[in-house]
Amino acid sequence: MRLHPPVYILFRRVKEDDVICGHRIHGGGVVVMTPMVFHRHPAFWDRPDAFHPERWLDEDAANRRPRFAFMPFSGGPRQCIGNSFAMMEAVLILATLAQRFAPRLAEGYFPQPEYGVTLRPSRGLPMQL
Ligand code: HEM
Image (cartoon, rainbow, N blue to C red; front, side):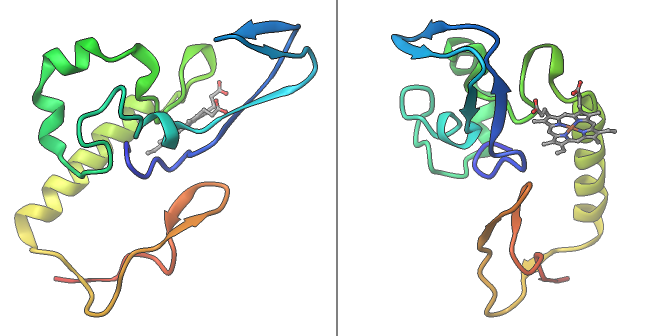
């Protein structure tokens, strides 16, 4: 969800001229946000490119981070309505499978990102159990 967020690009229509962090934006235009970039921004993350799930146990680090440094479900009034459901479902599925199987990537397969409407591994994610 941090390194390879399925929704890796978000768009917002600009209602009126404004200035964001010194950048002028124009009414009627479109602002594009890429969570992938700020999910890996070194100002917010230690070892930004490392898969290091234990980082989430560090509450101090989480409190120091700006609120929207991590937003795989977007933010504000139009954020994902399935946020909590998706996380609960993913954890339950992973925990259920991990109790029964020891998955490893199929031999010779290296996951490559495929940037479509959502970000996913190209050619699926073949595993040996
Ligand atoms: C890992 C799984 C999921 C991810 C990463 C995800 C991500 C997102 C993101 C980023 C948005 C906002 C798009 C935008 O602002 O342009 C969104 C919107 C939405 N998502 Fe999800 N989503 C996930 C699962 C789900 C599930 C399970 C449901 C339904 C059960 C769902 C229903 C919706 C709906 C209805 C919206 C539109 C909300 C609105 O426009 O008011 N999503 N999702």
